[in-house]
Amino acid sequence: MVFSKWRQALGGQVKAIITGASACPVRVMRTFNAAGIPVREGYGMTEAAPAISFSRMEPEGALLGTVGPLLDGVEVMLEPSSEFSPGEGEILAKSPGIMMGYYKQPDKTAEVIRYINGERWLATGDVGAWVEGPGGRKFLKITDRKKELLKTSQGKYVAPAPLEAALKEHFLVEQAMVVGDDLRYVTALIIPSQEGLRSWCERHGIAWTELSEMLRLPEVQRRYEMLLERINAHFARHEQIKRFTLLDCLWEPAKADGTEAELTPTLKLKRRVILEKFRREIEAMYR
Image (cartoon, rainbow, N blue to C red):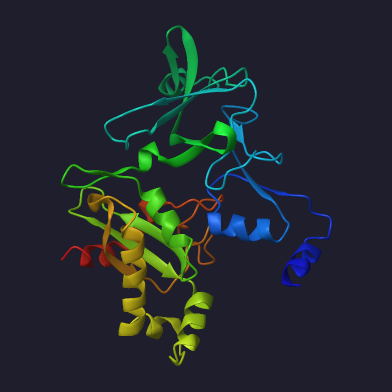
């Protein structure tokens, strides 16, 4: 009944939803798929038209958490590095759709075009891995942005995207950013889902006042600690989130007051902006 209302709200004729630009939470895709509205992710960039990989509508053509098999005519090589986990590498792509270069910017072009054994490859700056799907088919999984890898003061590399994705899949979390570059351990800034937290409070007999007050309650803090304990169990010790701060705000792609936004137009985190805006909260997690 609920799902039929979803389909009707989308016009009643929707066959599928295509998503890109940033990762779609698996929980969201699973819910829409169950509603009879298939969601498919693709991966590409302007420099590699029309795309690099794409999840198909055909049987066994999609695998949740990946961006699908490669398009016909596209080749991908994963370039390993000590910065990445085993099996991961920077995604290098080769196809007839790879750009000739940035207009009148040969230096910038040279930064992303690699010649390997006489072949021309595009260095995407994304980190990925292969995942074996149904029938042994290879699916590409994006694990992080190369430039976004954190390196703690202990010399350990941490990919923030998987941690942030795990947090945002939970109904209690609206937004999150992992911190830890050149710091002793990994922490997180978490913006709770007001709707999710309100629902949890109602189920546990906690009277709701306003979000800022609710975030200070020991019961609420403990609930988020439990969430982190469950998430941390899936990550290596040096990757685990040791401390967190709950924020009473919302990161946006545009601010009404004219200040710098925390998100890009495609809703990616502006990490530098967030680090600066919440410097005091971050410093408190390392005292």
